[in-house]
Image (cartoon, rainbow, N blue to C red; front, side, top):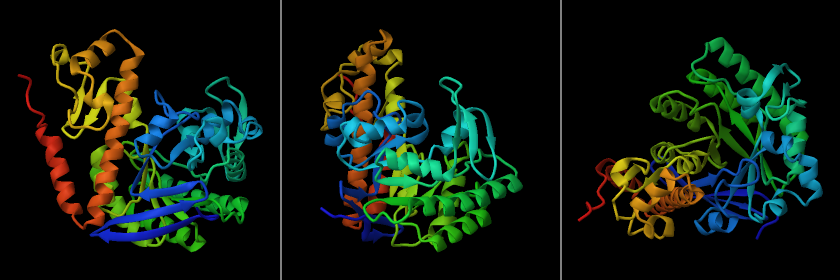
Amino acid sequence: MTDRFSFHLLGTDGGARRGEIRLPRGAIRTPAFMPVGTAGTVKAMYPDQVRALGADIILGNTYHLMLRPGAERVARLGGLHVFANWPHPILTDSGGFQVMSLAQLRKLDETGVTFQSHVDGSRHVLTPERSVEIQLLLDSDIIMQLDECVRLPAEEAEVARAMRLSLRWAERSKRAFGERPDRAIFGIVQGGDVAHLRIESARELAAMDFPGYSVGGLAVGEPQAVMLAMLETTNPVLPADKPRYLMGVGTPDDIIESVARGIDMFDCVMPTRAGRHGLAYTRFGKINLKNARHAEDSRPLDEASDCPAARDYSRAYLHHLFKTDEMLGAMLLSWNNLAYYQALMAGIRAAIDERRFEDFRRTTKEGWERGDLPAAA
C-alpha cells in the first residue's frame, strides 16, 4: 500500500509501455482498460464480477452523478466507493463531454458552461472549479480537468479556440485541485485533428506539470487513421514518466494500436453497450447473436475462455435470450465482453513484459480476421 499517487514505468517494447499506477486504494496495472460505471454502476454487472475479471479501476461520470443522485448526497453517504460498493480506485471524467453532447440550451463562456439538465430541465453551472469540487465530493482517486471537446470535423479556428479555452480551464482546474498527494488530476490534450494544435496543447499542459495526461477529443467520428496519427503527434511531447490516458476508446483494435503508440489507459462504454444489444467480442472477432444463423448453434462463444458466459452457454441459447428480450442475455454478453477486454489487456501486458508485443499484436489481429472457432459438427 501507498499513501500517495505515483506512476512507475516498468518496461517498454517498441512504443508500447508497461507500467503501474499506485494509489492508496490499490495499484492499476497498465496498459489498463477501465470499465465505465456511468451512474455508479457498470451496467448489467455486479461489482465483484467486474473485479474478478481483472479490473483494477472503474470510471464514474461527473455529469450524470451531479444530476442524479447529486454529488453532495453521495458525499453524505460515504463517497462513491462506499455508495457503489467498489473499494478500489475510481476515475471520474469532468462532465464536459456530456454537457456538450447531452445537455439542453447550453451556453459556454470563459467562466464555464451553463446548461439545462436532459433529465428534468433544471439549470446548472459547471465551471472548472465546480467540476473539481464535484469529483472530490464523489471521492474520486483520479480527477479530470474540465475541457471543451469539439466534435469532428470542425473548422481549425473553432478547434483552436476550444483547445486554448481548455488550457485556461486546465490551469483553473489544477489550482482548484490543490495539493492532494493521495490522488491525482489529469490535464486533457485537445486540438482535434490538427497536428500543430495537438502539439501546442501537449506542450502547454506538460509545462503545468500534471500528475498524468489524457488525450481527449478523439474517437468522436473521425477515421481510426486520424486518431492514430494524432497519437503519433501528441505522445512524444508528453512526459515519458507520467501516465497517458486515451479517453473514450474503444474497440479492441483501437486499443491494441494505441498501446503500440504509447497509451497506458483506456475506457469505453462499448463492451457493455454492445453486450446489451446482442454483440459479443471474442478472440475470433465480433459475433452478432441476433442473427438467425445462431438459432441452432450449440457451440459456446469460446470453449477455451475462463469466463462462464463465454464457455458455458450455447450460441443458440444466447440468440434465444435476445429474441425474447430476456435481461439475462444482456447480462451474459456484458460479462463476456468485459472478460474479453480484460483478457486482451492481460495479454498485452504479458507481451510487453516478454518483449513480444509485435508478435502478440499480429497474431491477435489475425485471429479476429480469421474467425477460427471450429465449425459445428
